[in-house]
Length: 583
Image: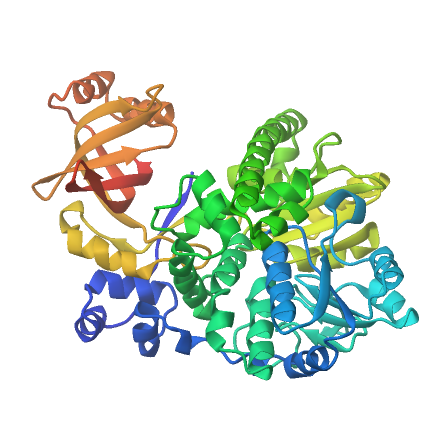
């Protein structure tokens, strides 16, 4: 059972609404999202002027000056195989090429290379005559690679956004940073950059802007890559706050009219060529196509799509990406089923931190399965599988549990690890799995409240208050995503006028609710059978059958809902999507 919690932040919502020409409900949602009153204008009308100066990032100008002064040396960009890493690599590659640099790239292969730069990749670079390596979306924990680069006389520059490795000494965190000519990462303790929660693609884009300024290239050229910074930000599930939200809002608009041949081909192959793009389309349609190449093939394919100059070739690559993603979906589904079976049959589901070992699961799918299990059981979840040389895995966390910090405390059991509070990757010897599971649970410090899913209600609001104008104003708060979730509203004790089943297999429900004298359509895409049983248990089977036949009944429900405008054959009507219910 989920806990329903009303967000109870205080402000003069009516006055804010009057000042900014918005409904007080919209003002309340903005305050709930942490928007300060003085920032309302920027939030409602974001612009390029809201972005922070790249110069504020520690080592930015040092790195840019060095690259600018060594354009004739052989430079190699080393990225990562996910959406963020692919877009980061593309941005840096394009930036240096545009300024006349002698540059190539290398993206690690997930199975053969593992995450990030390693000593073997540095040795490859040396054999190829590379003099400068610049990383993106990785490198902040690459101590062996940095040491090998120094031995081979290669200058290394790090651009990254992951948490800084540290050790705790007498209650104080002491950062450990690889030795490199420049380290650009806003999480560094002495980095004055005002917003820390940016992705690797954003760090790379800021580098591009500064490099273009150094070469006196029009800044508009750099801003044509804002769509890639937005793609990376949503793909890496960064909080859509501060400049992240601005970049994603502006980047989505740019992507709708993209000049990138590869992106245009992918939009066409996924049926989005004429769509009004949202963060959902990046997170659940386009991004998975990029990630699938890094999981099952090589991420070079996705980068080739972004670099494509021939339309026919772009269409071929895009269609291949879509096909690989379909294969990835079916493999993930089998992994989900195996994970649930293991939990239910072993008793592990009672652990506060779930550690699952599925030997035959493709190691690239561990993170996806961990995410699905975390959502189902609302517990921090690690999923492990057999890798080439040891057991590999990924973790996904809940809000109350900083996964990276807890792993740091168990670092003696791990071969390698890294990540964020909410997500992490690791390598571990098979014989250490049980000890890892035990230690993670012993040190979890999670209460039952932490493990009970919470549904946060923005505003208790009757259905009768919903209007077209209100929904259009709420749409101004997009893009929705991490830390800028869709607004959720609630009404208690709503009468049910009628119910009918919808969907190919009748697996969903469509209601007509009555509230304040108005009738409102409501869609429910959850478990219809569970809802049916709950209503019959609380009332009577006769009431359910009467509602199915549009007859008078006694059914009433408390609703968590999102309001929507439904457009059908040119006619617009109001409706809600039911997110949760109580009877």
